[in-house]
Image 1 (spheres, helix red, strand yellow):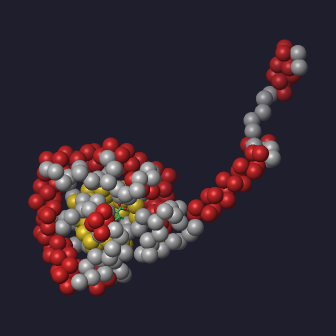
Image 2: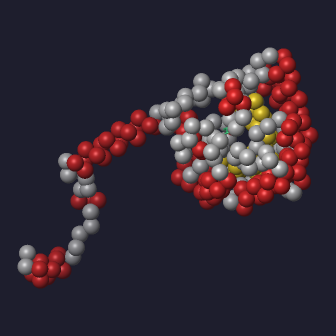
Length: 260
Ligand code: KIV
């Protein structure tokens, strides 16, 4: 699973055979430059979802419900889940443990598949505690295991586990009968998810320890842009191959007419 927010990168993720594209609300940070995911709106999530849905052919498309699009009422949660499905998502993801069970059941009951998200929850825990590993004590680990079971009972088809100690993630994966997808939660999850900009080395503001950089694209992009700037300034771009020419006879007539 990998995050996707735009047509171009989503096409490449789909082509690479990635099973699940997640239109994460991390879009607010990596695409829109917000400090965190709190300001992200439903309209923005619908726009990103539409772009990714135009690109994907084979992958499953999951879209995040942004902050305050599902917490205030079950009606909000169902209406906003419906908006993401109409924008092209196959399923929605929302943050929260047992406290969200009733909301999840209600969304699932109207026929919309839901993915859960526990552990570090950028819409809440991140704001109060910062980027802190979850489930390091017996009690907090028990809470996570209980949360996972309640989400499964509520009907989620999968759960994202964010920044949970790998031992607890393994217990959760062995306890529930649905796939758990880890991000910073060790190798014993059923699948893994990363923010695409982290994987490609395009976002330097935060460099999570758990994210593996497969390339340093920002360096290549900056080098290419500098080459372009230099070529334009020295007249090396555009060359003849990048230009279009007029019919010679027509050009001659034009010059005669304007006297040049
Ligand atoms: O928004 C996001 O990027 C997420 C992560 C779990 C990948 O929800």
